[in-house]
Length: 475
Image: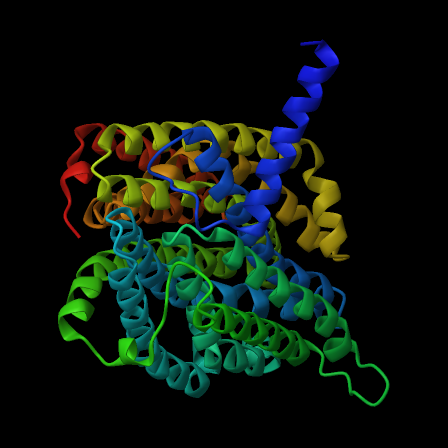
């Protein structure tokens, strides 16, 4: 075989795998065959999915960053996103439970039980979000003030917060239904729903913020409307494919009748999962408040700008690490423990390569990246400092994400919850406070505390992963 023929054959295999990953193939069995191919088939659509989720915040940030009173607008978007992180935690926790149970049932070759579990998770999501939405609408201004926003900033932006929290059901369903699809091995549908939602958001954002023809300029409120409409369209796309009956999951209306035994099993997995992300989210909320009180409106806006850009890079890595959750869940269901372990190592290796590349980019080009999102020099200076300090820990972030998803995919949600509690609340928050207040480092002290704590959390994750409790969890 000639060198040219070998290259063509290799290119053909790569192209076929990429096509299969993006198109989606539920017939592929992730419990047999090449682990590298399994990771790639899951990781490509998951990375693209998370890239689209991160684009939501960046699109809003770009357009509101060029409004009048941009520091108020950026601060409102950032602080609201910090509060929404609690809702994201609920969504991720439920999504994670759905992924773990659905993946385990698919690994056991029981798609009916997988479909029933997914629908029971949706019932729980509706109940939780009906409460969250009402509270968000009523207390939006108080929430911004509590987060450290000035009275002027809170008055300027509370309606944005009302719309975003009031429409949190869309966020919950977007995460949850995608978790169901990922557990079933169809990450492509999850990816496409986020792409559709983002395309709509990108089109609607400039129209609703700045106005177009007969459509008035809504300003900051327009960003919330565009995001909400975009996410709603993405959810409708998910629902269509969930009920089309073409995939491995066949949904029936009877599956929506509450099954309290199944709900209890889901909540048993989801509760610590939700708690682990609430712990992390509350830590980020405290850090945002600490930056706002020590750095003022410009310090807060700079930190929020850097944080949104950092999340743009981290969410694709989270998407890649999601492959570990599906592979661990399905392979444990198929009693393939060694294969589950190998899947974790392979996913971690790819994530380290990705995050190392991103670290170099942000350290070298952080200033140019920040300049694209804000024209306020004071905001820009703080944002560049924040981004470059936080990016130092990117490699450890990448490893930690894979380990968290491996634990959660196995249904061992208590281990990462404990790690997060000690890592964030008993280490990161006190460290940030001492550096910012006691040593008078202000926002810089907060920025330093982030990579230090994340590194410690990852080292703890490696220790508990090697102990192997996750292999023996029953779901």
